[in-house]
Length: 141
Image (cartoon, rainbow, N blue to C red; front, side, top):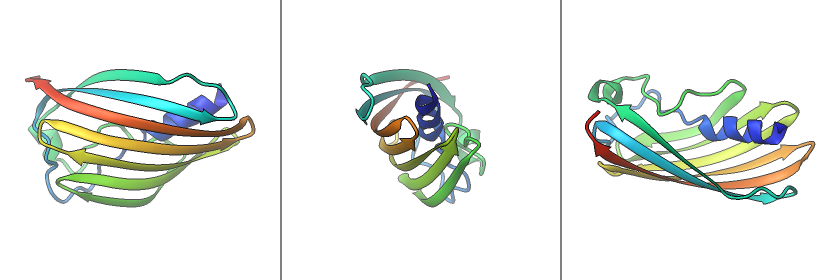
């Protein structure tokens, strides 16, 4: 489905590049769970996704550190970052549609909390996606 590909690209485009302070994130094995609720012109059930990721101290200190690589077709409009979190706005365009994304992440040492709100406009209709993200350190890598 074209709309879901655009929305997925928008959700996964979460850059953390050029962070001046090291994020308040403990290195180790992390588990991230995201719950997405969708409302709009199409009936899409809530979606839950869980992923694991090893985060090292070297990665946290790197200027290129990012949870997920920035996606092609997305433009970062605004970004505010410090050791305790980040907030950002971006626009992604693909396959005749556009997604406006506003996200916020809070770095809490052994936990990460955040939300991403996405308004997707496409020839198939408008969708509003609200995603809650919870991450926790579950041990060493």
